Image (cartoon, rainbow, N blue to C red; front, side):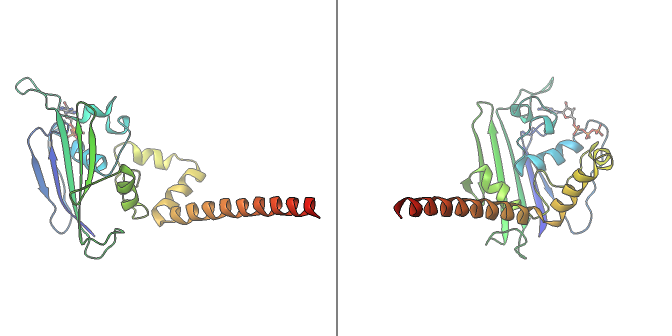
Length: 199
Ligand code: ATP
C-alpha cells in the first residue's frame, strides 16, 4: 500500500487547489516558517477522519477552511482528497486504488467519500482500523507528540505499542466475546429460575 497523491483545496493556507504526487522513496517538505508544512500533514489527518478541531490547532472545525488574507477573500469550502495504491489490499477493501475525500462547508455541511461514494465517518475509520494508519495512529507524529510518548506512563506506552502491533482489534473482539458470554450466562440463569418455578 502506497500513498499516491494528496489534493488540497481551501484547507487552511491552501486556498488554491494543490496536488502533491508522492514518488517512490522518501518525500521531504521544506519551506520557511509559517509556509504551510504542518498544514499539509494536518490535511492528511483531517481527510483520514480527524474529529478534534484542537488536534488541528483550531477552536472549531470550520477553522480549517481558508480564512482569507489581506489580498484574498475567505472561502466557503475545504476539500481534501487522498489516494492510496492498494494493489496489495493492505487496506481492508476490494479496491486496488482508494481515494478518500472529505468536504466541509462553512454552513457546517460535511461529507466523506470513498472512491466517489458518500460514506459515513465510521466507514473511513474502519478502513484504517488496524492498518497502523488513521487519525490516531503513530504513523503521523506531530511536533510535541514525540515528547509526550517519551514521558508517557508505562501503561500508556504499552497501549501505544499494542496499537502499532495491531493488537487493538483482538482486544476489542475479546471484549465483545466476553460481553456476549456474560449475556449468555445471564440468560441461562433466567432459564434456570423459570425451570425452578415450574418444577
Ligand atoms: P513552522 O515551520 O513554523 O512549523 P509551517 O511551515 O509548518 O511552519 P504551518 O503551521 O503549516 O506552517 O502554517 C501556518 C500558516 O497557515 C500561517 O500563516 C497561518 O496564517 C496559515 N493558516 C492556518 N489556518 C489558516 C486558515 N484557516 N486560513 C488561512 N490561512 C491559515
